[in-house]
Length: 362
Picture 1 (tube, rainbow, N blue to C red):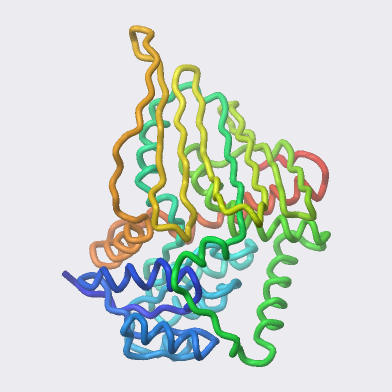
Picture 2: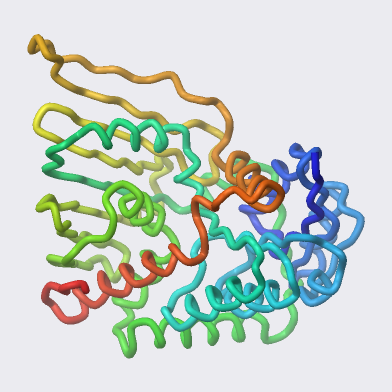
C-alpha cells in the first residue's frame, strides 16, 4: 500500500482527540512527518505524544518539507494556508469550515484546480455510517413532506475534558489579535456590516450548523428559498426554514446550552408512510451515531427498525477516503468545490435574518 507523508497544521483539541490518533493508527496509509502550531509547546507536545519526528511553529516549514499532503485544523481562517498549500503542490484536507466568504472559497477552489491536487473538506458527518444508511433510506421516500434538524449544543469543554488534551499559553505576541482581525475581515466580506447578534449567529452557522447544512445538501440539493431566519439569545440561538424546489421544507434549529452536558443533534426526514431519524454524537466523542427507520409495510403493518451499523469512526473513514482519493484517484465525496455551495447558503440564511424577510436563491 502506498504510504502518504502528511503534515498536520494545528495541534488543538480536534487534532489531539481525533485526527492524530487515527493518522497514527492508519500507519499503512499515512506517515505523519511533521506537526505545526503557532504555540511551540502545543507543537512539541503533539510531536512527542504521537511520535512525530519534527515539529514547528511556521506552516511554511511544513510546505517546504517533502510531505505529500497537509491536514489543516488550525484556528480559522484557514484560507491563506490552504491556498499556499495547493501552490506548494500538496494535497489538502481542510477541517470545516473551509472558509467564511465566497471570495475565500473562490480563491481556494482556483488554487486547488490549478494544482491538480486533491482538496477535501472535513465534512465528517458524510462519513458517518448512520448518515450513509439514512441516505439510502431517504432515497426510497418519493413524497418527502417535512425535514427537521435540532442541534442543541453544550460547551465543547464539557466533552473535551473527557480526553487527555493539553493547551498552552505561549502564543506569540499579537497572534490572537491578528487571527481575530482576519476573521472579522472574512465575515465582513461575507455579510457586510452586521450587528453583534448577526455576527455570532454567522459564526455558529459556519462553525457548527454547517454539519447539518452539508448533510441536507447531500440529501436534497440546494433550497430554492430561505423562508425565514430568527435569531435570539444574543446570537446564540437560531431557527431557519428552508424551502426546496420539490415543495417540502426543512426547519433547522441550533441553540447554545453551555451548562448542559448532553449533546443533542438530530436529523428527521418525514414522508407520508416512512420516517428516517438520525441521532448524531458530538464531534469530540468516540461514540457512534444511530439511525432508526419507521415505515408502513404493504400489508399495512407499522414497523420500526434500527439497522446495525459499521463500527468504524467517521473520522477514520474520512481519512481513509482522503488516502483513496490521492492514491487511487477516487472522486472526493467532500471536495472543496462543493463547499462553496454551503458557504453561499450560510450567507443567505444570515441575510434572511439581517433583512427580516425571505431570500430567493438563484
